[in-house]
Image (cartoon, rainbow, N blue to C red; front, top):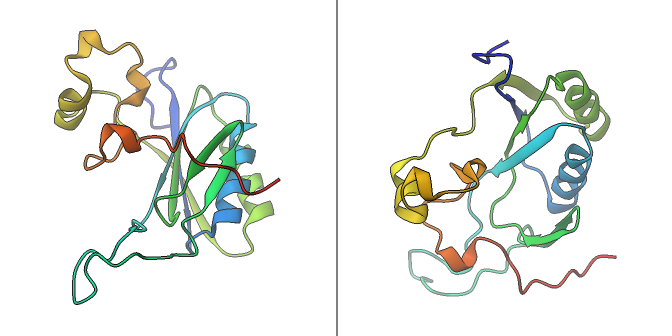
Length: 164
C-alpha cells in the first residue's frame, strides 16, 4: 500500500489502452460513483477545442463528436477532454471492485495502479484561484481544475441533457 497512514485516502489510476468515447466514459464514471467510499474522480486526456487553435483555419469552429454532454449521477457536464485516464480517491481499499468493473466494461486491456495521483496540498495555481489555504473550506478541490480554465467554465451549468 502506498499511503502514509491508515487515515489517508487511497488513490487509483485507471489507464485504458484506448481513449474512451463519451458513452463509455459516462458509464464508467456512473459506476465508479456507486462504489462505496469513492470521494474524488478526475478525468484526463487531450483537450477537445471549441475552435481551431492554430494554422490556416485558426478560429474556425470545431464540431468534435467526442465533445458531448454527459450525465454523471445528478450532474450534467460537457466533456472537454477525450478521456484517456481516470484518477480517483477512496476512503478505503476498493482496488478489486474497480478491477472487476473495468474488466466488465472494457473489451480491451487497461492498467490499474495504486499511488499518489491527486494533489493534497495547494499548488501555486490553486493559491491564485482560491486564495490562502486557511480561506479554502473544501480542500478536496486542490488539483482538480485545469490551470488555464476561467472560473465560469468549471461546470457547464447551461448544458441541457440530450440523453434520457
